[in-house]
Length: 174
Image (tube, rainbow, N blue to C red; front, side, top):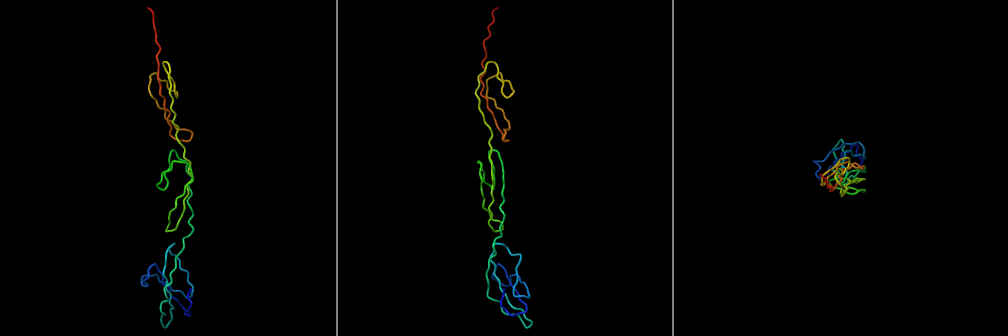
């Protein structure tokens, strides 16, 4: 708002100090709402009266800053196996995490609600005579065997069997 008795006004505003590089707005009242300004930015403003016999001198420079609008947070809920990467950070534990960022120069806090599930990794040591059946497969030689599957949480899992097969002695009398 400008306190003057002129029938028309001219407003010059911008982010620099040079009037010639500013945006000019003409108005017929002493109050003018400026639109399209960038949030979180410092502006400089001058006002002068526009009359039929000539323009008045520019006012002294007025400096003002625009404020940041309230930027809604982004809330993410995720479930992952073993780890999850969010904003270039790897998370390996269930928890609630936040990330502060700037959007058009204004602060925003994002939130992650994370559940980390893990694969199942069981090891079993068995000794058997002649053969051993494990996960539906019959084995007749000593070795280490693995069984890969997806567990109830949807995560890759592996069971390992360390198997020793003993063979009986078969004697025959002739």
